[in-house]
Amino acid sequence: FLSPKKLIQRLELQENHTVLEIGPGPGYFSLPVAKILKKGKLILLDIQQEMLDMAKKRMEKRNITNVEYELCDGKSIALESKSIDRIFMVTVIGEIDNKDIYLKEINRILKDDGILSISELAGDPDKLSQEDLQSLVTKYGFLVSKVYGNKRNYTMNFTKIKIS
Image (tube, rainbow, N blue to C red):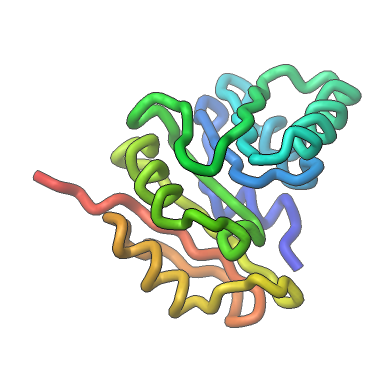
């Protein structure tokens, strides 16, 4: 099990960060993350408008205003290059059809000192093993920087490979 508090620690968030959550669902992790970003913002990206609407309703109910909502076509991410400090997804990567496209886009929009954080949990039918996830993500210019948890429930953080 991954609590929002544990995820926030793993993301190494600062209050001025710009954070992208891919596949937020109804916003279970979104609300606690947005609260940390007192001088920053959270962007929720999903291919389903219904999920964005549910998350937005949850945020508005609690007067959280530092959140933006982006509907995605699954082929590109309409955000500026090197504009995001942290990108995270929880039990989402296995469900993405166009993993190659997403990972190229993630590399493009993530700042050079940013972190891509992917969490997988036991019981998810689309869960990737740590080995499969590492093999997939490192093909797109990332290195594993930290691994938390165990084989059943884990978070793997990646950093961009510095090109001089």
